[in-house]
Amino acid sequence: MKPMFVDELRTTRLLLTRVQENNRGDFLVMYGDSRVMVTMGGVRSEVQTNELMQIDLTHWERHGFGRWVAHDLVTGQFAGRGGLHIV
Image 1 (cartoon, helix red, strand yellow):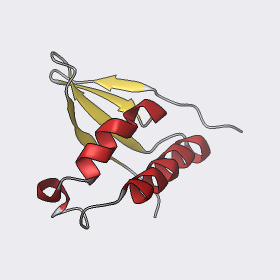
Image 2 (cartoon, helix red, strand yellow):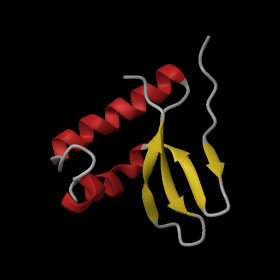
Image 3 (spheres, one colour):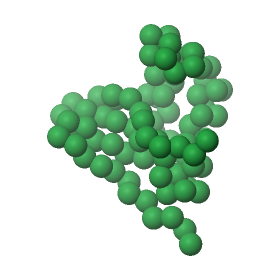
């Protein structure tokens, strides 16, 4: 049976959506920022970022859940990513 997806969640401050191809630009900025990545395993190259995105996209397709992308509900500004992932 194919997993069912919840494509988005809203809190009082954030819009959470499943990882999508159009998040690539935000991920490139995040994974390339040494201040952010100091606690997330270090800066990633564009190739590494693309590989990580593909892992996230595939995870959603296989399991029906995964990492979420967070945007400020008012401004739409990228706020980060988080969620569950089978390792």
